[in-house]
Length: 157
Image (cartoon, rainbow, N blue to C red):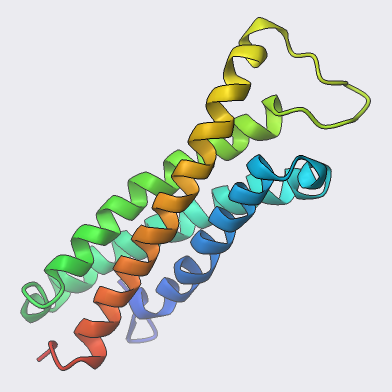
């Protein structure tokens, strides 16, 4: 995968590096700071989805990059594993962020109802969303650091 001869992965990875951690921080704030939910509601859910897509594209383009340049395989093994884990974590965060967008109470016209399912989901989301956000932040750091080490630390041929 390339654009005008340049490998796609180094180009799209920057979107993943920015969007996934920002989405995780917003999801953390959304779950923890009730007063900010009205402001963060749509942005958090939207950015979590866009961040998940960016990470997915970065991961797939990275796999294609290694297939195009097999010599990279050994040098980026750790980076690839953290990237794979990050894909799962960021999609879980996106699902939780969309569920929180729907379930967590915001003072609005629709009130704070939502039925029995919403009352059951609220406590779970208030625990799972911040946990997922922390996992995404950690994995984004680890994936980014291992990738940068491979590129700038002299591991690549």
